[in-house]
Image (cartoon, rainbow, N blue to C red):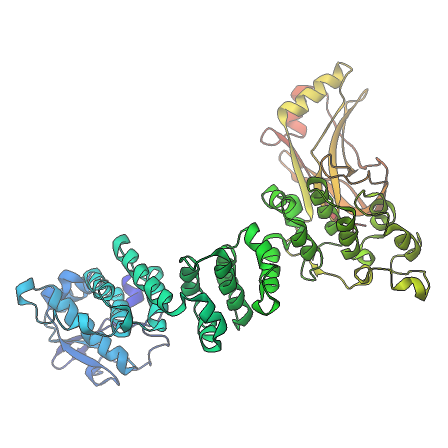
Length: 556
């Protein structure tokens, strides 16, 4: 540990000699609040500080066992005492015991005075000693305290002790064997208190104790053999339903214990167990950002393997993050293609779409042609919207009860961290091959793979025009081969199309505000004159690539 971080006030001159102050102002440990700003002058008497404890110190013995004390003591040769200022009585005692332990461990085993003292200390005191020893870089003292803890019986431990022990590996260097012993000790205590799942769930007092566990303690408990996977899920669901506040990192760590099969099982738990609530959390953690799921096959493939009950619950969630409701329909199209479904299941999914929040072109021209948007609902859909209306509907009161409420529900959450810039780099070999083919009278264009944004798939195209040697760069809405979405007959977007050019950086090729793309129409223009293949490096290739990007907004 850095010297300055631990010793803010290294020494004060005193009439009896030099006394060393250990100041713990910036560390997370026994001192949870800043130390009182006193004794700033060189004439301050450190021993008179409130809460200070002065203990005999042996410079040689302490320096042998503390990397932090070693350089200090080398300059304090006349030191008669070590002064540790504290603002808490328990911390004062832990500091005194820690220094005694450092001194005692340095002696030969037959000369040690406190071999029986330290193992008899309560766990909470030993844990405080560990933190003091860490600040003084006395690793042998840390290991001795942990050894004393591992030899204790579980009757000595309280649940706060267990939680403090589980947090030790993140704060101190614990050798693997000792860490394993600590976990075994904590496991035995947790199983003693919560191993009988039926009793815990039936007893309100035990249930409240379970819900008060720290995330680390609950994680270790869920790794124990509780009799069945269902018992583990019941504990997780109960804890999440009662925990007053769960930090994002802690929640994610615990939810990652849940597999796809576990998530399905959560839906079968009694309502009072909170299984549905935890299942919602699991779905939002893994598939809540719809844009990211569509873009990344690491999320897309697991989503397509979900059973129908989970997908139905997912489609009903208000907390999904979307650019617009088009994205929900796109992702459901992926799932429907990969999963066997019944007509009733497709009707249920169709009824969960927030149709009124889709873009008008998608709602009017794409959605009715989706194979999974069922015919049983389609008549009500056709009756609900005119082609020219985005929110309005036209049907009588007798039909209103047959129209799914979700169609007119409010918007879901706006997508966060959605990249609105599409980019693709064409390898030099592909560009060269296209230009050579064009000059020989054959292939004249190359295309990027479909790129997703805003409920649509888009494509870049580079085309060679002859005669003239013009290189054109274009983009437009396309159909992605794998999802069974209809060919987009109409799409609208504002865009700024650019290419990376040698020596000049990004250079705009074309732009448009509110441009409508009909059928295979594309935006772009003839951009560069290319006289030969050798000319490519000068006009458009950077790092052996032709890099094209497009910023999109106002997608409809």
